[in-house]
Length: 339
Image (cartoon, rainbow, N blue to C red; front, side, top):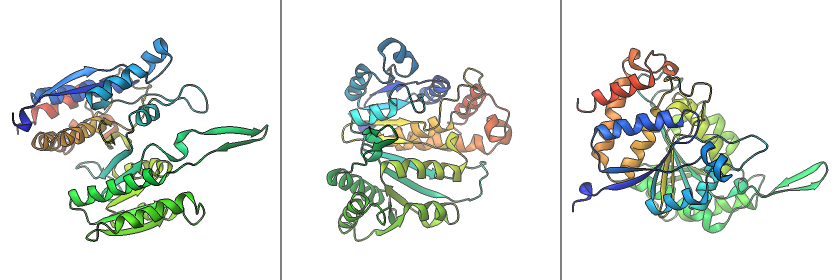
């Protein structure tokens, strides 16, 4: 059997708010191409929170572990209280250690900068997101920043391997080693050690606050950024702002055995069910999924059709200055898949 003749079973986690709408739109587009994909719906979010007291129950995690590939919509997380993040639970349970967030301009989406083309590779399982917190006294709380040498090594190597495979030329390590000399110092040390194995790729490092300033003044100097969990979460959203916002930003969580692709924006409950949401971020995440499945030609067709629609102002959704509904936007993309 040829690689492109095999079938894939993909877990579909629709999530909350607009999640089901953007997932349905994306599935409709991919199904129109008659791709070798069998969709397996995996419950999560508010639905399982009510029935299983978890937004990402063990049964759903096990199903994604078995399927090895998932496509996920946004799930809600309360601020300061309430249940644990479904995303964090999924990433840690499946050891999806690499969060990959491309930031590339799209045609027809006007932004302060054009020709932005960079990728953030974020360590996804360690750092402050371990949630190791405790109360020292009535007025003092503490949160533990935990990094490991193996965890730092594998994310740095992932970034350099990506640079080599994609024929990119530079990897920048973002850190705060001037202040956190042990944790960030070790991360930087590991980065430099790994970099020595890739002499053809330029390796540089930058302090996180300077990086943020450089990104909003000279973003074209960056190619691939590798960094820790918290810094990566913040910087990847900043980079989404460079290309038009989270509504057009794709994302992937990659582990050794499992990969989950997701729209990284929120659930937008205020517009849920109104047929006005923009499925672009979910669709671009699905394009990343197709590339992960070695369906490169098919991924290119989807991207090309999306770009054609975005070039026509009246066909865009309202958030991008158009008048199209979610269903109308979806249909426009389907119509251009074979053009």
